[in-house]
Image (cartoon, helix red, strand yellow):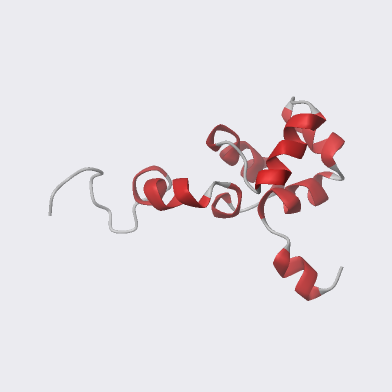
Length: 90
């Protein structure tokens, strides 16, 4: 795999590669290989699995979560850059 291919491979595809394949990742997470295949097709994993995959395989959570969810949740759930209290005004 060259540098360009590596840059293109992110998220769940990178997790599958690091785990050694769909079946191996499924076994690691305790799910069926069909579940992992579905994640691959849609390009992201359920939010409940993001931190688990990040911890076990070192794949950045931002690459794993659905982009729509990341845009909504990033400041409050995955670390608030400004130190604000979530939901506070001002």
